[in-house]
Image (cartoon, rainbow, N blue to C red; front, side, top):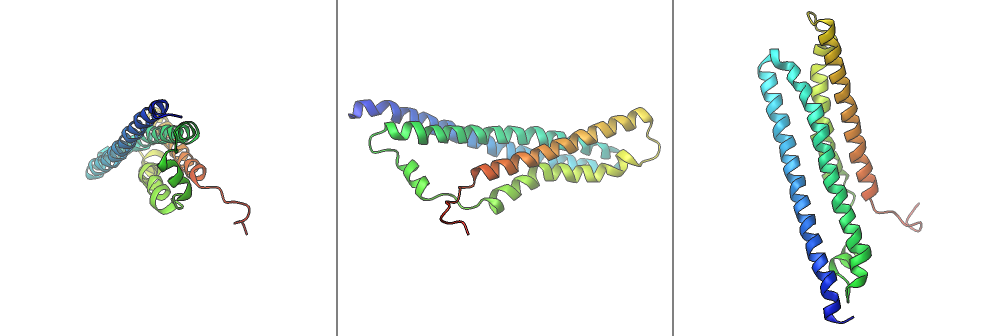
Length: 185
């Protein structure tokens, strides 16, 4: 293949790398928003006990933001697979990054990715659910319609927290490199 024929795949690679960079920046913005929002709501609600129910906003916002974070990660993964499987073979000499990343897989990301994601998204939500448990289920003076509403919101937050945790664990498991049969005990 002459250099003119490789110009298309190289230009496509450059464009896709820019998209990956943009999506990675979105992930960082989502992470910062989650940390800021959770901290602000916790600080505000805990400083005014009469507003404790405000903590019930954290589980749903955590769920929604974790979904956006996971969607960006999935898009980055899809683009990376396309680069590896489609562009790399069409580029004379290949793409150095693809070959290097295959030879140097990332280590297990339990400590530096999965646990922080679980603490940041579903962890903040579960903390808020725990803090509001007595308010939702046991506090006197809450009417039946209000109690039902609080229970529905609380259970929706619990469901969202479970889905967020499951999503991050699934991403973690899919990203782990498969061990060859020779390396298995």
